[in-house]
Length: 447
Image (cartoon, rainbow, N blue to C red; front, side, top):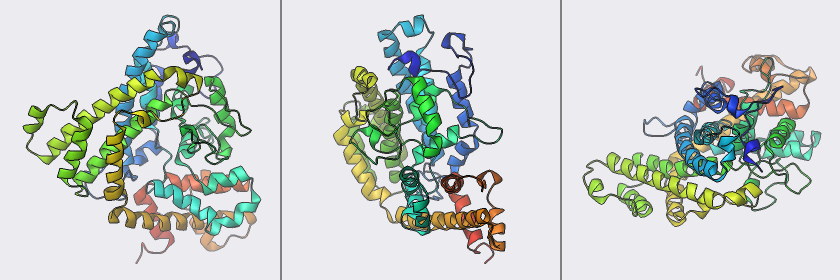
């Protein structure tokens, strides 16, 4: 892979090349990507989507929105630092093409900003609830009417693939969705493969999948334009865009440290435990005199969080540069933080977060509620839409479909696309809107 291709400014539908040296330096195409994501409706909806604690009423807890903003800040730092070193190693990128270190930061920041944009309500349990509806619920009746790959898209509904659709999906009058540069889309694509085969190897890029069958043609167009290396297998699969490793590292750093901080602020993890675990991570960078002067729990935790994130950023950049040649050759198959010198400390923090936060009673109870809400909504809208497609709709179906935006009601589309369309609709709901819609469908809102 070559950076002059990987840093492509091209967008869907372009009829002429976009060259870096021709860009307006006050707002280059990668900056436009960031702005378009920020102003998009799916991004705004992240303000009411679960990061760790569903439907939390406290100001302390991060939503998908605040998490995504923080990941983008970390990603920008990672990208700029790596970019400066890459330009030093490959000076022709600046001399002949005009690329600058901040371009790398802008690409990574934009991809980080969008990294959770396809996640359904109620966190990762929302993905599982959609998949379970088709694998074990009433949706199982449709299995024999589609291909194996289409069925896998549904029973293993994936937020990353859904995010690609949100960013790129065509709508009437809105071809190409948000229309981001191919470089940003490439960095966004953490799992550049189809849903089948499921986890064919232990390579990090095979852990999940990155596009639905409905979006395969454009996915391949982006991969080809960027010069991503195709894997040697029958199904569609590519090696990662190099900057994806930095996007992933930014996310790993933030959820490791900041989810932990949420648990502390909620009282799920005691301050003594928290300080012990964080100090282990930052002891080589800790200013103990400054730390001793901090009087409040919030200030102590905030200081340790800042030092920890700074240390992990430096480590991730060093790891990226150390393995950059392998990454370009498509032979590096692990996340950067798996090789971190702080891995033991990271693992300890994640283990404690799993025990005390992710498996807490509050999270468990709300995830159970989320299953019921999502599967009820899927069943109500799919049943109504399928009866309409067959011409057998009842009055209740007509009423329910009034709650489904018109763009999700193409009854002339194949069954797979109709089902996927309802999944997209449900996935775009905020946590609160999903609850309200559930109450309406179940007749609870008037009781």
